[in-house]
Length: 324
View 1 (cartoon, rainbow, N blue to C red):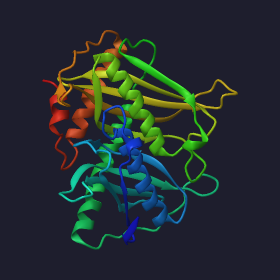
View 2: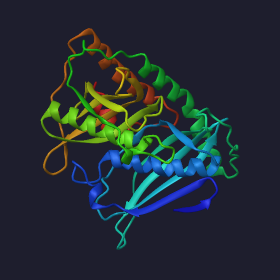
View 3: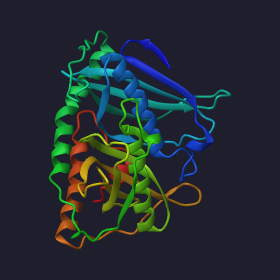
View 4: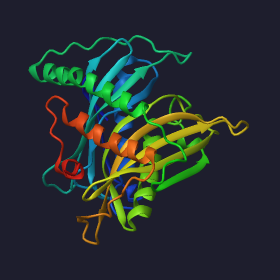
């Protein structure tokens, strides 16, 4: 780890064989776990307090990270609120024997500093001093309204048994190996579960290998505790030419009760691949029930909101998924 600047942290390490997942390379869930760890290090270093993940913005997964690659994850604080820190995080890698560096993904992560009682506490204010820092601060500010629109749109949806689309639920206990430095399940592990559930759902639907190309609007509502029962529900809500939009909810609760609380929610886009790794068309999903149609329209609405973000140009894989 390096701390070349007080507001920036870089983690460097080799991608290990155990990081390789169902895709044959490092899965998106592991990349998200790396993102969360680096952003956490930047947040606690700045706040000098325990911090929790509140939100992970849109992240596009480009070229895969392979076992043996030298990975670099840089997290930089670009804006602070009263207790929140907006952290721009970039994941890149290269062959350790030499060669060019490849940028794989980047996103904005928001952490909140909390005290011993779990309530938010003030953080030192970050004041940008260079043109690049000012540009990054302004970019973060410009996306606040878009993020609120996305969160409101996602919160307005209902997911019940009235839906007819492909749906899977993974259930298990949160184990001590999932714990973070504050005694809770850390956000990176939760995002890894989300990727796994989305993979199962998408692969069952299309009958092919699938891989994540995008995760958006990862909202953390409450902490998930060790020993809790966890449910990760993934449901298909939309298909485009070559991909599947999967809504994922994570719920948890004390096994001694029947109460399950929503902890995390996001939308993940998966694409199907052939044996060469090329994205291929998937069967079109036709919404049947009223709930199906509402969620189908919701997925298109999120695409439109993201497309209106300042300075944002949807990558080809998302624009193509949007259909006509």
